[in-house]
Length: 140
Image 1 (cartoon, rainbow, N blue to C red):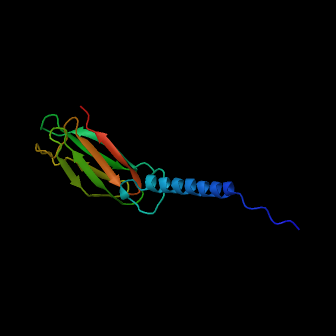
Image 2: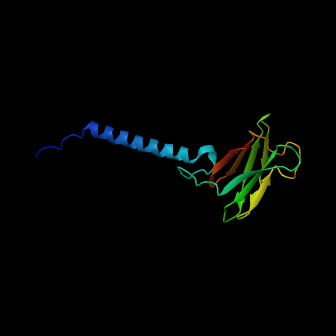
Image 3: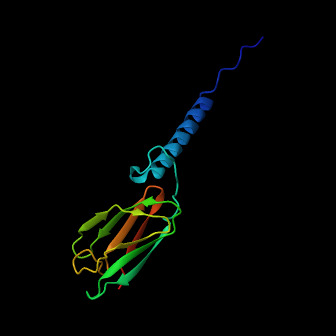
């Protein structure tokens, strides 16, 4: 009887390389799905779009400043993080309102002439952990 042929080191090397490639791919998916640490442990290549639309209106009587009007398309209440970045000085205003189902929110309202209203170039960013961020720049 012949002795069994010795195992080839090439087969073992191939198995190790394939395992390392698979582990690296899984690690990459984990990192992509956790940009900014929003939902640890959940692998997600993309999030659905935020269920809302932003329109703009001029303030009444205070020149060319704007108010952002957020129109909800949501079926359940959404806890939002809204950041307004002023184009003039980079100052950031942060709000944490809840958008009721199919609700309406105004940012920069109350018809004031202070820095709570938008001017052209100001940026509004709206976040919720379950959706991709919504970002828009104040027109005109």
